Length: 134
Image 1 (cartoon, one colour):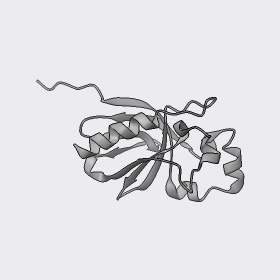
Image 2 (cartoon, helix red, strand yellow; image 1 turned 60 degrees about the vertical axis):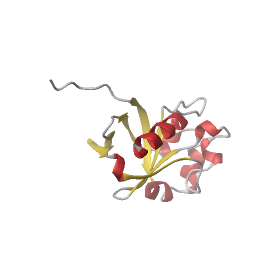
Image 3 (cartoon, one colour; image 1 turned 90 degrees about the vertical axis):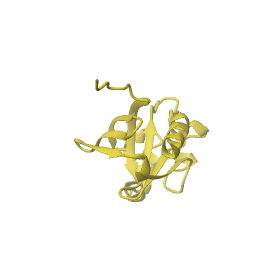
């Protein structure tokens, strides 16, 4: 009997690639202080399964599906591309950054709460590090 297992985690995301962030203007970064959508135009659901991570709608209508072996790093930190000034003063505003060989670095804000500028990224970083190591 082929049973469908429930996902390990799921949530709404806003995302961008490192190249997209690098191409943003100073004006975009200032505008992002009021609305992160300026820097993170990709949106959808991110769903973690035992054997894959599905980032829905990554390229418009196409899902990005990553296997654990395709993720080279998982970080939750500010970078030169997305710093504390843009992300807020709290550590909970740090982006979730996935390193991949085929797609470069992917920046995600999972469960972003605009008013508080908080995310679920710390929880997702912990989950994904364990998933990659398994």
